[in-house]
Image 1 (cartoon, one colour):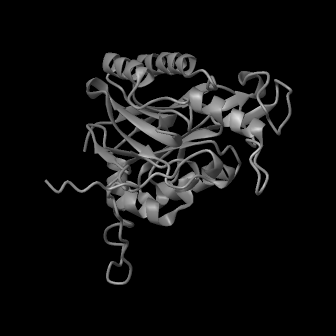
Image 2 (cartoon, helix red, strand yellow; image 1 turned 45 degrees about the horizontal axis):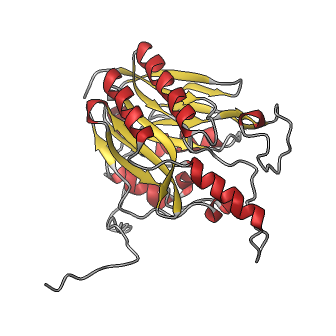
Image 3 (cartoon, helix red, strand yellow; image 1 turned 60 degrees about the vertical axis):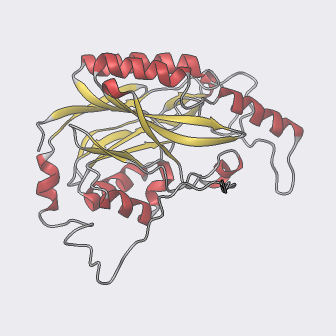
Length: 312
């Protein structure tokens, strides 16, 4: 196994509706984490493009109001293209620092938005992405559904790195797929700041015998434009997300966090040997799987609405 190294989670406020400013904030955090000897850094869900907490997009059941369509247009314009200028800037930062970075973004593709986790691997730049398979609740109004083609786990010098976004972590079959892929650094960008979130992450760490790195924003209403339509009110001091980021080891021990006090970067030392120690008595995709009784079928083929047959 590789040597002990330092990992980090970025509990920072995004700059919603200004992807360039949010990108520069991320670049500063990457350099700060690198200066503190971190080799892996995980950002929250929708850090670029923004998480529209409290927005309703003017959609009562059976209706789409004009102001809701305009709110979506504005949100669409704030999203990023992948690849694009923001991903190029992040690739420069990871190349300069040698960091592996997991970045939550709102990805624009055609006329659809996706909640996506991007993976940057040092000098290799942008190496892949995971699109959220199942947006939660009203997120389904504004985000498309990912398919099985973007569920990567990357083999790196630090370990096998993948990401599961927010309430996807409550999908047992998705978790089982990630465990079967041998994930050892399980990244969980989220917008869930409830007290129940870290216990869920401790369960994932114990279940997968992996390190879990979960990052959530600490952000106030004042970070959003003044005319942002928010069901939670207009007081700029209202905390829309209160953080709760954490790093957890393969036996469920919390190594860093949860922090609810404000913006910060949390650090912990990762010992890859602890993963093997944990699997001594529990390997959910190995000796504890009972594949003679239970099996999971996973379709990783990309899905397109149009298939063109070349008959020539």
